[in-house]
Length: 365
Image 1 (cartoon, rainbow, N blue to C red):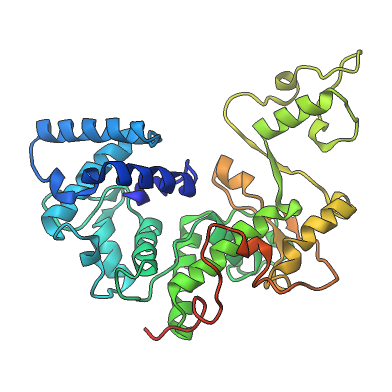
Image 2: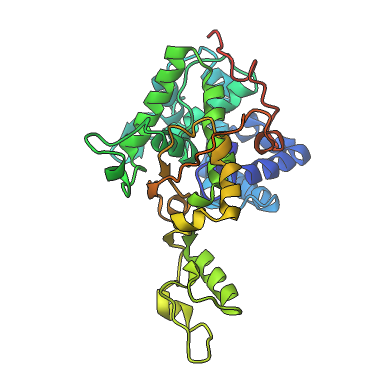
């Protein structure tokens, strides 16, 4: 059920906390057999009940999809899989087999959802299939088996910025500005991560943690990756307008009136309506300032991939326009790096302590 909220639009940590609270107070909502039954009237009643419960626990995002998905998926688990999602993967299936079970048969218009078939759960695609496998393997509820990592923005940013996935016949410089968020690229990312796990006998859970945490805990705080979206720029410009400085990047293309006040921001920039990505906040000269160098040392400077990482890639383009763009070559720090294991960026998070002798060890599959 958690995977229903992993399709974007809400922070995964937030959805996890709210579902945890819901489970602790109303565990009966998580019993698959409760949703056994047929007929449109019963289904309508169950969807209405789930909708009300989800909204009460602040899980109303996409509730018009997630409530029917909740009822349908719970019912299918109860009817065909003994009410236990472990049954889907206890035989350590190949990913293609697991994807068929969870996604179902697919055609031009997507998955064919059939209530009389054990295969095919609503709103699951390849990313969510890999994620449910990750969740259950990580919790020790199913045996470890080879699977792609769940490929999201963070994983793909690491693969692209380190040229693991690159454009054929184009140099590093020629690749700047190309959108990598394509279905063929995502399929290649799944293929390469599963290949890596098999070849080097590395747990896909460990590989996923490494890729995801490096991007989320380091790339995320690299000031060179910070980008403007329309709402951010509007807020920044309004704040600066109280004490304007002509050369501030947030005011680029925005005029001031004769009294030195900010002219209509929407008239000057068209920043109305939904959020739009406006590019990186800082040029390379800005990044050479002492305050920025300090932040770079705490991000790129402690990253184990610092020698192979090529690009600045902001999350702004992804979360506003669904694109992953290498926007420029990354500024390289000449002073080496710190050992990232044991560094506060990893130790002081909600994640488990990083033990390189266990979590990242080669696992006999």
